[in-house]
Length: 587
Image 1: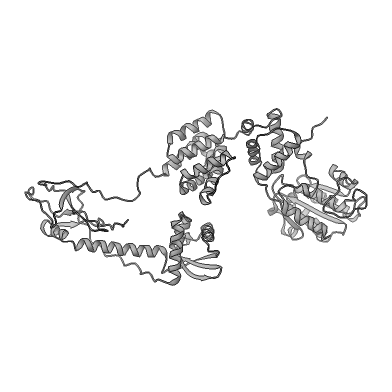
Image 2 (image 1 turned 60 degrees about the horizontal axis):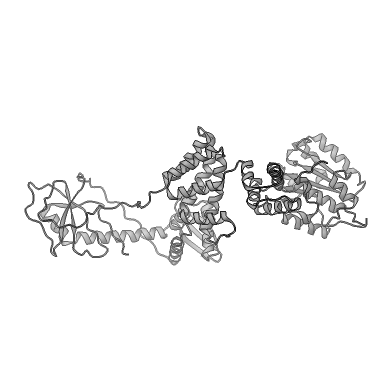
């Protein structure tokens, strides 16, 4: 007894049995029910999504005679009449399938078209199905154009291709085009569970999830892999065996890698990479699985939700999403994607994998280290008789400094000839502490930079400032999208459409515009965005810069008017080190 593979045994025979292509099934079913039949159909899509299957079901719908022999055109072929059974078995004389991959010349097409002049012998319609039609030569396409445009009323063309870009537009314009989409892993997994239930084959849900992902949207590939898994597992489909068969990486290794990267643990990263090498697991598969996990982490970070407790992977991914910042998740995702292309350039793929994983640690800021420059201030200590060294700066430490005020670092113009014998005091009883600094030469006086153009505030600018501040506070925009929002000026605000203007073309990227539009939608502003390049006068970034300049000027004025600072400059020849005055934010 010969064995029939699952992909052929469970090939759909009616539109109701089709999986994952509801948009195509609905259109064809309605057309058949209303008798609004086109003379040429073009089905496009990747391998194994049902192009040939839909063609055969359509041929049966056109030629079905019904169980009683009195049927007509229908969207639900009976499957028992001679036309239905002959089409399923491939011997219906009025249904012709031509493989254009091996019959691509003009002679083969002309031979097929010669049959078009004869009426159907057995059925109601002649149906010519040309598979992989994009493989036909240019002369073959030209030979069929006239017949394709005005065929006899009893003739229907069905074309199928995995590469519609190679089909001439003259052919596309003569056909109704239907795009069969790759199937979602959840859809494939559900169908595999149904098939294995009918076959009485026990299967672990995680194993089916792996097979569904490995199929990459193709139901035929999923069923073929399932056949292989049944043989590999001796009649059972188990998670560990499927993972071994596919050569894929155990997700526990992936979770461990991401957790180690989140914690900055380079040792664990290297050890886990060595484990993958030891077990002979694919480095490319490891990066691919990491990309998939990171994508789910990013979605969870953007749209937090309670994970399904029955899905252990979802619970683990949700926990990892809380440990790793969103910007590091995006960075690691990008590194994994680009790293897969670099594996072939590395000395070996495991060395390439290790370098890709360590790349994030090279860009990851050390924990607890701020990126801002800090002014070194020693703790307060009483000094009985301080000695003023030649290369010393003087810093005032009042007993109670006013809020928002930082005293500057000052250095002497000239070292005193001998140690001081008296401690200078500031009215109010403050101490003076010597802090070593690098002695710098007098800076050259340069022309003062031109003052920044003042912000011309507008009503739209006030609204845009408040909107952007809200997005930034909620971390709804990051990286380039945040920069676009901050640097842009809202120049027009109509119902359903906003016009932004930026000064730099590099900020006007389609991906950034779309992400900013999505963030505005989530914030309740359902509008479309347009971005133009031109001069701006009012943007959130300019407003922030103006506020910062005003705070800096106020802080400098406080220091310059301070009596103690003036005394130090007058009595000891001290000067204020440029750039040492920084305003302190109130908390």
